[in-house]
Image: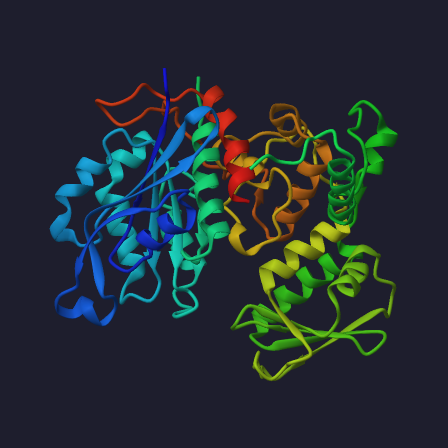
Length: 179
Length: 257
């Protein structure tokens, strides 16, 4: 039986989900972008309205499917659709947003059931734009989690950064406790 | 594109050079017999005798005082540590820093003074800047060379208090695997090497580095993780098994660095 992996990238608008999938995908990514409206247009010209999709080709014709969710909450009906069949979650948090700690908490809670069944790895982006909050502040909030969650500073444009984040998720899945 | 055949002379030379590069951080000590006291002694070192330990002590004082510190070495070389920025300004080459980190520091070989925090990365054109955690991580690896702090219990389970910021630290072979294992299930150093089928020195080196950052937990405060079966989300493909996922990860790593 052909077994492919499906990994979901989520996070708020502008966190770098589309960029991260572009950085690591072996194929041209499929995006469903629309022009940004209201306050968003000052940050980026387009925004994802349905999903992003990329592929990493592995051995024996197997593939890792990368799905990016829309960041805006008004498209959150897509979130539940996209996580179907997912093996794990990559959460990107934009450190330059007004309250990135709250953003992280929001997404961890919103995807809580999925994370309980699988695993999550968190990348904090745009730390070059805003150096605070620092990673230890994110870690303090994660101390309440029952699991030890991978958390790294990530430049979504850099393949190596995204790769380390995804590898940490895959290794966490591989080593999670079994009886 | 076809890769270089693993048996070719070029491949062997490349592999030899890569191993040589790694030796500076992980040494070349073969796996030990844990029943041999002599072999156990050979894989231990005292971090406090090296730059690694001095940095730990000085950094603790610096954070308490909230003031920058200038570490002065014997021949005009220096490192300035900045507490607010959590950065280090280094006015020596990488190889020189490696040499200083790998050798025990002689009495009088290092002095330090508190100074004003004049952090200005753009001004120090001749100096390099490194994150403090990256400096502590690297100096620990150079000092350790695949060894462990002298009072480490090889058979005591180790957990990670939290993941190091591995996108900004020197990544050595199997670092992510060991980190994930210790984040998910505490294992002793010896068990870890056996379970992952990797040289013990890789585990020892990683332990020394996370020890330097204060992230290695061998005590009672480990998170006890409940059993949660690995599974795809409802209604879709069958749950992944560890075996086939294990087969994927090395391939993924080789593709993506």
